[in-house]
Structures are given as structure tokens and as C-alpha cells.
Length: 449
View 1 (cartoon, rainbow, N blue to C red):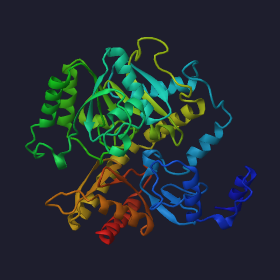
View 2: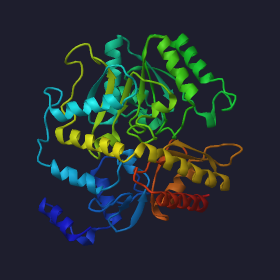
View 3: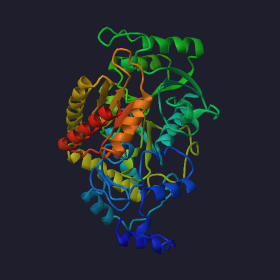
View 4: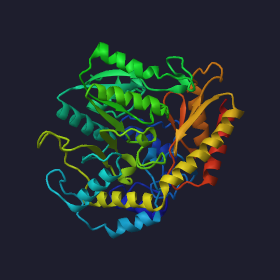
């Protein structure tokens, strides 16, 4: 961190801050005393330098460079400090920051809603509600489905992740730590996610007769058919980067419709073109009634959206919040959507994803502890096991691999599920950088196993 950046901090009333204090240990200790325990792991990750970064390269405050394959947990579609983005942001820097968009209309918010309705699958009339997070985007869909259907029961999956607040938390099922001690917000009928590598019904992909769909039908028969909606990730993110077969998703959709319910596709991680299509549900040839999205939509700002059928709510004041696609944020989101389209990133993401999976298949062949590699576009997972035959999960090995990758290989990476590595890099990552990431992962696996 340069002296000019330290001076800014001093100007804000922290005169004690000097260049001598720029160490990971100092700031991790200071952060631990001020910040509540959430999801941070200070045993693995250092303190990031907020004043540096370019593309897929980030730095800690001691100056160490890392290759980032987290993309800010799927937030940074175009990487860090993308020059055209910064230039556009500077051009709109003097617009009004806050207008209560659920009370009054403004042009940027309306245009963004129109754009999202256009790119969302299906020719049906759509409406959009904006929010400030993925969990809240999910909740907007849930509240709308309850309001329009008059029902309050939902279908959810195991594993699944839809957020950590209220109704969204009730549908989440990826880690007991998320839920222990918190009451259930809504009634959920839960069935197994279509997880072909670990099919709970013992099926093989080639001969699968989608017993998972039959299980859903049975669950509804014995637990209640009065469901408002089925809520599904078209690519299970936090649960382990699980790619379901299209026939399973289509079957879940058909069963949902048989009971007069809505189908909600949670695209918070997988949307915005990450998988090679605007929305991952498009890979399954299903047109959902609702889509929840966030993360990359905001371009680094907190932005989420619930897309649903018109009118979404039975009347006014059924749903609202203070911040709703503020003018600057809406303009930036529109710019990102146009950049993704103009830059042909849907095609590029699909091609880079194919290349990445091909490289990771080589790693799988060469390493007994790599049980499965899977993904779509730039949303890819690596499942670590004790050995390929038993498929026994290896969570401790996964944690060692992450620590080695970060601290020894200079690869900024996150886990997913109980025993998986997660790769959700920014769309601007190159094939050379993907090669480097794969090499670092393999080195970390060999060192840790």
C-alpha cells in the first residue's frame, strides 16, 4: 500500500496508521477484535490490499500477488479495476446516489428492469423487484409466489444454498452451521438434489430413470401437495458445484406444474452469463416462473433482482425496501450487461469452461484423490476424496489443499460443500491464467495428499 493510500486513512481520523503496520498478522488480529465471526478464515487468508489489484491479480498488504479464481465469490464478472468500467463510473459519478426506487420511478431502474425481463427466458410478461443481496432476491420471489398462489409451502433440495436470512435460510441446506438454533421460517418439503456422482438411488448417468423426480412426487403425496413453488439452483453452488442432468430438472419442473405451483430458479451465483448462457436454467430447457439474481449484476455494488410473472404481487405495499437499484448502480449494471453482450462473453465463458474442464480432467486422471470435476462455463468444482473407489469425502484434505494453494502457490481460491474446490473466476481470465491456476491446484493437491 502506497503512502498516499495510508494518508487517506489518516485523514479519516486514524493518525496511528503507518507503513510499519502493514502486516497480515497485525491486521488479522485487529480485525478479529472488531469484526463479528462470520465466514472468514484467518488461518488461511491474509489481509487484502484494497488499493491494488488488476484483472485476476490481487494482493495482500504485504505485497504478495495472488491469481484470483474466486471472482469475489462470483461477483467480479470483469475482474478488478477493469479500465473501461472505471472510466464509465467516473462519467456518472455525479448522478444522484439514492432515490427510493420502490416509492418513485427513475429512468435507470426502469431500463434495467426492462433489460432483465428481455434476457430472462420465456415470452411471458415479467416484472422485476430490485434488492441489495442474493438472499433478499430469493425472498422477493418467495413472497411473490406466496402472495399470488395463496400457499406457503415450498419444495427445497439437499444440498442447497439460497441465503442466510429468514425465508431463504429455511430453504438452505448445505452446512448445519448456517441453521443450528434458528427457527424455520417457512414449511419446506426437502428432497435430494440430482447429484449424479453420489446418486442416493444408486443410478448410473447412462441408465438413470430419474428416481429423484419420483422421490419428489412421493414426497408431495405424503407431505402436502399444496406447494407455492419449487426452489432450485440450476447448478448447485455452495453445496458443491453440482451439475444436475437436464432430464432431472425438467422432471422436477413438470411435477411442480402438475400441482399448480411456480418454479423458481436461483441464479445468484450461476446467472449473468457465467455458465455460457445468461441464466444456467437455460441449459436445462426449462422456462422458470421466477429468477433470483445478484452478485455480478451489481458490478461490485450490492444489487439483487427478483424476476417474476406480472404483476408479482396482489397489490401495493406487499413488498418493498429502501434501497432499490439506485441510479448509479442501475447505470453500472446496464453497462455490465452491454459489455458482456458486446464482448461475446457468453460464448467465451462456454469455451473457457470447456478448456478448464479438459485440463482438470487431466488432473483427475493423475491424482487418486480427485474424484470428480464438473461445471458449466466459468463455474467449476473439484471434488476431493480419499480414493476413487470408495468415493469417501475428504474434507480435511480439501482444507489442506486450499491452505497450500493460497499460502504456497499464490492461488486465491475458495471451497464449496464439504469437500470441493470452487472456481468462479472473472470472465476476463485468459487460457494462460487458467493453465496457471490448474498447475497451482495440482501442485497443492500433490503437496497436501
